[in-house]
Amino acid sequence: MNLEVLGGIFGMVVNLAIILWIVSLFHKKDKVVVKSWRASNQPINQQGHYVEIIGRKAGLIAWLSALIGIDPTVRIRVGTKWYEHNRTSLAGEEVKLIPLRKVSSIFNSYYRPWREALGIFVVSVLLGVGLGKANVFAAAVLVVLVGAAIALLYYFLNRPFQLFIYEIGGGKCTGVCFKRSLIENVEVNHEKVQYVCQIIQCLIEAENK
Image (cartoon, rainbow, N blue to C red; front, top):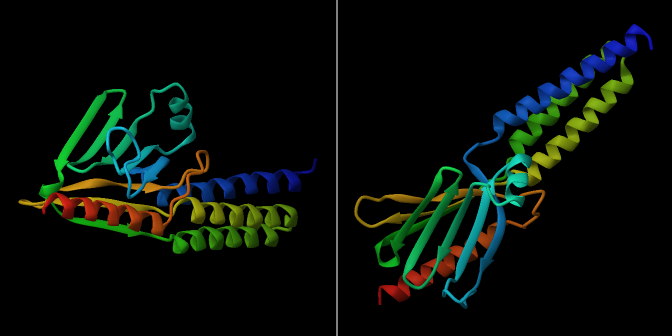
């Protein structure tokens, strides 16, 4: 193996590391991935909840921790009387119960990270062009292809949504930012988020009658 090939391989590794570093800059640490999503206009369990969303911290290590039941989780459950926000971790558990009659409004948003995905692809193309000028064409093509794959994965797996409620008197905000998980593969889309908001709104209106 000559020095040119070794230099190309080294450059490819460095370039891929740069791409992954850029991905990490876009990645928000306060997001959780969806493990379970249940919502219906009829009670979904014996406790009378109409909505139950369970998430965990993103990442392979968190998923492995989930297999043995020690992963930090976030659980949102909504019944006829209460909005329940539950957070568990190795340090303990935090539960917040908000009466529906104390909820003033519901906020949700959905974001498509096409700019970030495009930026990752453009960087990979520029790195590939640099390798091509160094006559390491195989590595240049590989960097562009891998960069394109990372950009697509980032786009489809990092489309976060936010679900928050605001309390009457002081406007306290409670909620979470979720995204889809490649491992659990629970589908998350704008229609599902809107449906959850409609259910919560109906429950609030019924409680305030």
